[in-house]
Image (cartoon, rainbow, N blue to C red):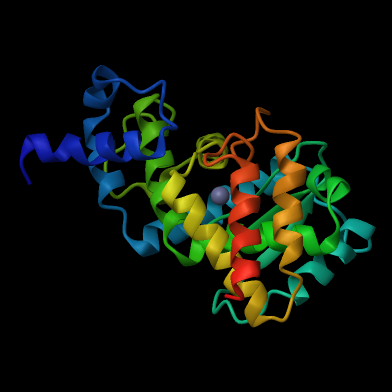
Length: 249
Ligand SMILES: [Zn+2]
């Protein structure tokens, strides 16, 4: 691989994801060694990083207890999301933030603020969308970008490859934050919406609820959550679901 290509890969990813405003070529060059290993992270590396950073996120947040009404609601939500072929592990974080995310290892986390805002059917549509990002490979890519970004900001120290097992708790927590704040491209968001629609169809679940979930998110657009600052806008996404419902497919 040429020196140019070595740096070009994460730079292109950065533009596509539009979530790397603080990166610049200087810091990227300084962190070049780590960026190279980020671009070549294997599926097994990504799974290890996801396992570890999900565990750190669980430590940093308040996970709803097994007998919590939120946990029971999420179990009901997940029971209508079968046939993904993924090993899903879903839990609720007790926080007013309106957010949800999934990592490439099947770690799904839904914030209680989102569940307060939405019905179970609507939460199912949102979780289906997050699962779509996993199934379509977007989360794997986002984890690679998060790793690159953390490396460029010096959060991972001067690590070379392969050093994944050497990451400390706080480095993994930083990585988890980078991941949760990562933004997906417009094309990825639309593809995940369609994945959720198809998954709801496969499970005989309420597909109108996906559109109403977006309409509720539209009332919050402009918030801090990466889920809410997405493009296309939530209303446009609701209309796309309406069109699919009207078209019967
Ligand atoms: Zn998304």
